[in-house]
Image 1 (spheres, rainbow, N blue to C red):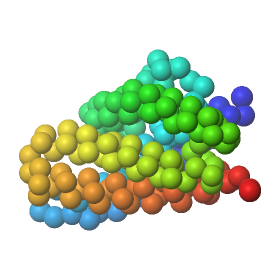
Image 2 (spheres, helix red, strand yellow):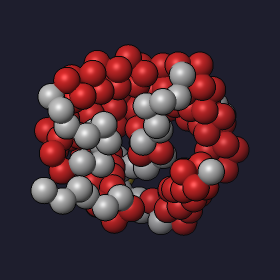
Image 3 (cartoon, rainbow, N blue to C red):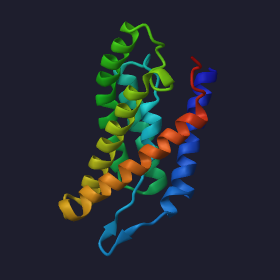
Image 4 (tube, rainbow, N blue to C red):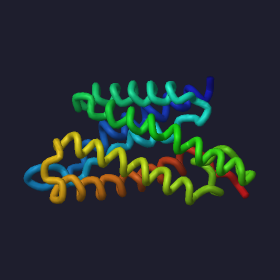
Length: 175
């Protein structure tokens, strides 16, 4: 029960950060924004491994739908969040079995022992999220002049925010 309340609190904190801080940071040019960090991907990446595939997809969809409601983005977050929820299940199964096979703790994403896994996991899914979000939002126009630079800048900034928030919210394991 405490874990569920913590997840809800993290989700509300991320919505608050996105709504009042990140949406007010504007860096762009004449036909679009270059800087569109979407911190909600952090919530999707920290879902417990114990959730079934269907639970992860449904939770990702409804959290994306809630973000769409707040940001008036017409289902883009719901679609991309559902995609992340679908693929995350398979990646987490492989990584979790590899980590448990090495006799490390199963808290793969909040452990200092698995920093390499964590960085690839966070950066990979953050880049995928931003790529599809910005591609759908721009309708595929101006791919090299808008989509790619925006994906790179937004993914890197979101990745740095995720690392900072992850270290603030979750205590690292002591060795």
